[in-house]
Amino acid sequence: MEFIRFIMINAVSLGVSVYGISLLVENFNVNVIISKIAVTLIAQLINYIGYKVWVFKK
Image 1 (cartoon, rainbow, N blue to C red):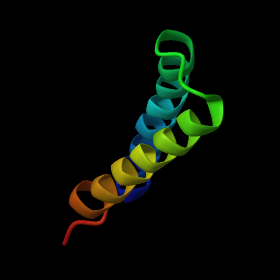
Image 2: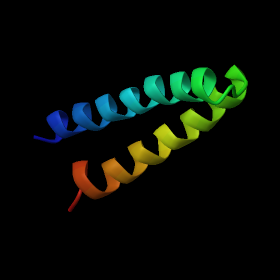
Image 3: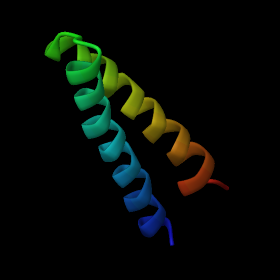
Image 4: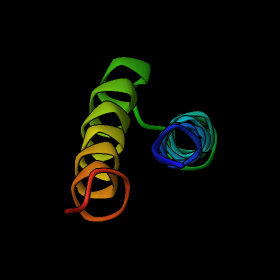
C-alpha cells in the first residue's frame, strides 16, 4: 500500500510541476529559470508533506 501512495504523491508532484511551469511562464510571463526554481520548491514541499503525513505515517 505504501508503494501505491508513494506513486500517487509523485504523480501529484509531477502534475504541479508541469502545470506550474506552464502557468508561470505563459500566463504570468515569469522567467523560465525562476519558474523552475519556484515550482521545484513547491513540488518538494508537496513530496515532503505527502510522505510524512500520508505515505510513511506510523
